Length: 192
Image 1 (cartoon, rainbow, N blue to C red):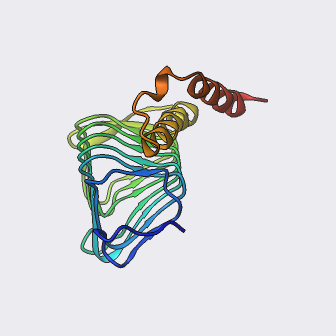
Image 2: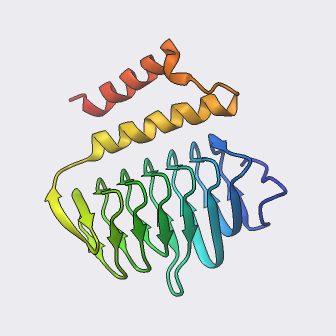
């Protein structure tokens, strides 16, 4: 476990995250998985229930995560929750990408390997099957496709970037080791 910053509430459990920006605010019963990252101005609160953020998941700038009245917020591994999203009492499966400014409301369940398009609003209680592409307001499944590799590669990019930010390197994409890590990740995902 990683030592929890004093600015976080006492119920926050950090399981070796890759990077947490100094402006991130985290309160309540929250578990942040190994290799996960929280970027500038993220807010996570759980006065009841819990918030779980999976390994290698990135929570990007200005994301707000809260619990629902009767539902926790659970985010799987290798997910990208992109800029300005609101996740409110929803469950997101592994290897998902939630597009810029999307909103997921109480009781939503997003199946693994899915993409929620930017600016979509997924209304209360909506269940999205695995391998879906979702768009609109209210959001609907518009296509079925296995997005696993693309979504994991996006999470891998943020994982490498988070490790770089943690050591003060804000231009990891300029580095050969970054290119090698990304090539190795893609090769491992597409082998066999």
